[in-house]
Image (cartoon, rainbow, N blue to C red; front, side, top):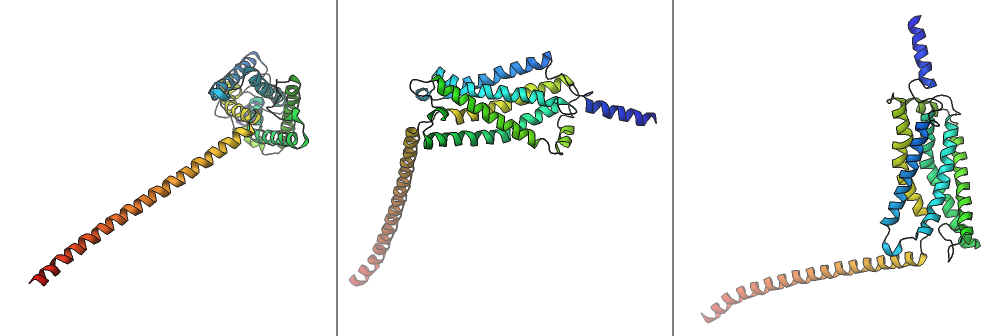
Length: 275
């Protein structure tokens, strides 16, 4: 009876956060410290991305701010929603936060891509230049930036509603039970959930999303494609010339061999005539 009671209490403690982070772990002092540190590291990656751009095509700091601030607002809205939702589920909030975060970074990224491409299509076909992501006019207009920010945050709302509905499926309870079970220390688990895993995932997601959001000159894309086609044609021409040269050299070798054979056959015939 005692062993049964102890096993029940251990199981209950495990599901209530005894071995993992508690209900207020995400909103505690250590949790907020990790969140602020993560935000700083994530946007440092976007600064590094700007310096990785070719110098002739590098965005000005104003355009860079317009592009990246949309991600900042959207990421903050998603993050706060995940922190709040993690406390609404039963069990360890860290695991629920991590599941929401990973879904936002995978399925959510697909929804963002579709939404951005749809808005760019509408901007071209309907003439709604304000929602053409990455285009702010000349000189850059703050109204266009604000319209795109609101549209991007609206996409984040769609992402969060979709992921929340997807999280209602029953099998996530089984996923939650084993996803962080090897980590018994609550603070280590919180560091993995709030800093280590999100840092690498956010670095990739911010980099990819920034490529979606930044302006790409259609003339430059056509020029690059024409240059690529010219390069391809040059390569094909070079290969054909090499092949022709190789065939000619083979022909010369065969002709020289035939000449030698004819010369060798002519010598005995000449001797026979003389004799």
